Length: 118
Image (tube, rainbow, N blue to C red; front, side, top):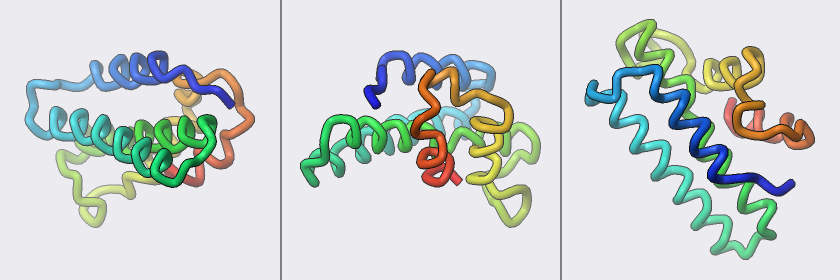
């Protein structure tokens, strides 16, 4: 599956824009997400994975902490033990609420992405 990275980055930026980027905790998670995606891409390329697999690795990095924003909004913490499992919340936001389609149209890799996020 070919992933439109610009579209996925815009979808993430649009999602994160619903939260207060002036809050240092929100800004931390926005910056963290971009770093993780870049690191996933670097690791995939260092393993000489095919471009489609590198795209999936990169997208997994973009999606992995989507639930952190809602966790912070609802509970004012990033501590799962004091709130909710952020990985499960990420999977719920993306797949149960349908936001995964903001990032990609093709459902072919949904099971893999859901597992990677959760």
